[in-house]
Amino acid sequence: MKEFDHKYQIGIRRFHINWIGIYSLYCKETLRFLSVFGQTIIGPIITAILFLVVISLAIGAEREDVLGVKFIEFLAPGLIAMQFISQSFAHSSSSILMAKVMGNIVDLIGAPLSAGEVTISIILASITRALIICLLSVTIFSIFVEIKIQNLFIFFTFLILSSFTLGALGFIAGLWAEKFDHMATVTNFLIVPLSF
Figure (cartoon, rainbow, N blue to C red):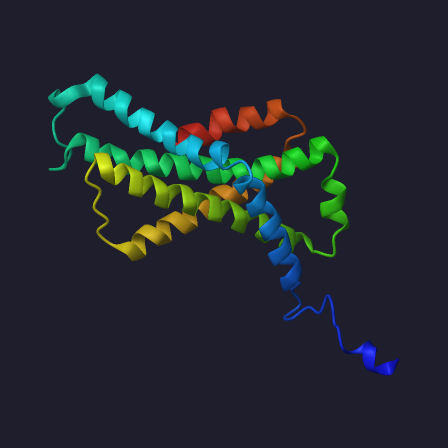
């Protein structure tokens, strides 16, 4: 019986971090938004395309260039950034708020994860959602508009840092909000103005 005591060591923390727990919660959060792919990924991309179409039709060809760049080419990266920033916030905030409202936050609190491990798992899932939305948006927008990425390092640095920041802000807002009206207030008066 002694040989089984050390054969399977579940819950070993390397560097005082539960890596298996972080990965499991990250997978759960990623599958949560991938299970409704049409709402969480395709919806924001279509919204950005509609913004691009409406603004380009409303302004037309009369708009002057912006620093030597066509206005529509100048506008497209901003619309993409607006979508992945707002969706990064939406993922982490809705994850916490929905768990509180539905009463299954107890599963998250009772899990053998520290507060930091739960936080980093949910924020990493929101970064993943932002990355997917951004890369698909750039690919689809490239069909309609010429998008030039001058520096991939700066592009991905901005993408990861901004989605991390808004994911963390969404996590804080989800902890603070007690009902959907509170979250709507934060989204409408803080996140939407920041994303424009």
